[in-house]
Length: 222
Image (cartoon, rainbow, N blue to C red; front, side, top):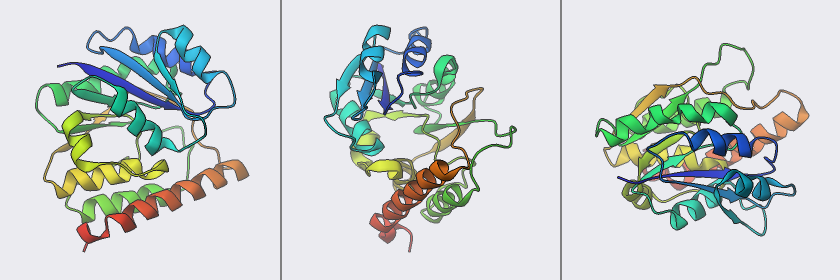
């Protein structure tokens, strides 16, 4: 089966080339698609130079919309969804493909090591974790992980939610339809949101998007 790696990117000119280059060493990946989500820097140009198929959105539409565009223009039967700031550790994404390609899971989700003590306070993760478990799924360690693999037909069946609610929507959709999710520990790393005021604003937006995703799918939680 063909595999399409899809990377939504917003102002990631410093990291996108390294991420694309790392994915190119994975033989199972047939195409690498970067969706520049209205960046104000050279993200798209850096992605093209690195060898990715690149599409530019005229304005910042949010992660969910960028992923929807990427999935629509891709060719693979398997979708590998990844963040833009993984850099060289993106090569570890091969571990996400194996459970799906081997038929052991319908969606795989990367679990990063959090031993560095950085990151948020767990509120958004906890809300997403509760919603997915409430819909019949497992209690995921990292339900908001942007690194995951799944078949195209499942993406189409579930649909998507804009912004940062897409992972929660996928988790609820997989659960309510009775499909299998598996978390895969991977030695990946990316930029962690800090605890300064900018980080708090980001988490506030993320919380709002996850809450909206839960509201849209509330009928599956009661």
